[in-house]
Length: 123
Image: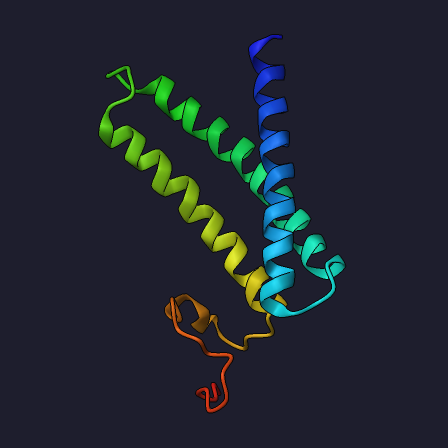
């Protein structure tokens, strides 16, 4: 299998597994029928695949123009932060719409159970 086809197959298989897992978890956490969270997971997966293609194309072009070749720790760190940061910027608004959050407050709600009675009322 040529390298490009291998990368496409790996990415699609990875995202298919992710859709199954994330869709199931969203269905469980939000107590909804599986169709709605799986549709959201498919959309998020498609965005991740598209972003991966765009970001890696830009990053590879930038990397080729650099005098220093190779993959240093800093270059890997920049790649990871840029890629994941772009996903956060693109997918947090989608998730906020899905869970009907008026503001992007969910970023600060890590680990707390805000679904319980007496939860704070956000403006």
